[in-house]
Image (tube, rainbow, N blue to C red; front, top):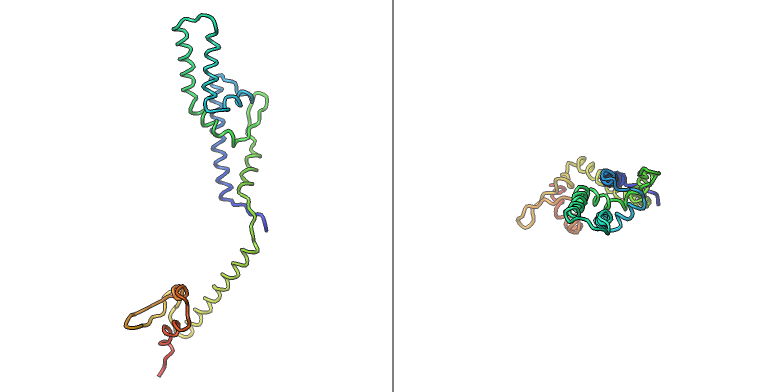
Length: 207
């Protein structure tokens, strides 16, 4: 066995990872634009469920209103402000929330960075397989033997002015029917010597 990396799959996975990174960073930027904290604990809380952001904003609105008296118009205004805030960032945030599980991020003081090395490692591991090179080589040997046999067959046909059995077929008549089986068809339908004799005999009959 040997290690085989599917480069096409590897590059595809890296492209998918890049797309996920873009969504995560865009969602974080959407939060920052509204001055919503983006520290590790807050992000964990906001992305814990599909409704976590709504709950967070509803709680924030309630905290702003407080327990004392607030005029109904002012209360409505506050709820409307947070409702509009949710509408502005909801789509970007949800794309971030769905992509976050596959994007390893690192919190560095007030900044957030992507662990690109970990992303690349994960993509490579997913696209890495065990290759049975001995089995592959053995199969190729069989194919190569057939290729050599076909080359020998064609050389013999040319030398003896015979038709190209593989590409053109052998032309003959049987019970009033004109037939022209090619080598592939001949082998599929049994490849028997008696059938071959019937088809090829005419090329060797001489007076």
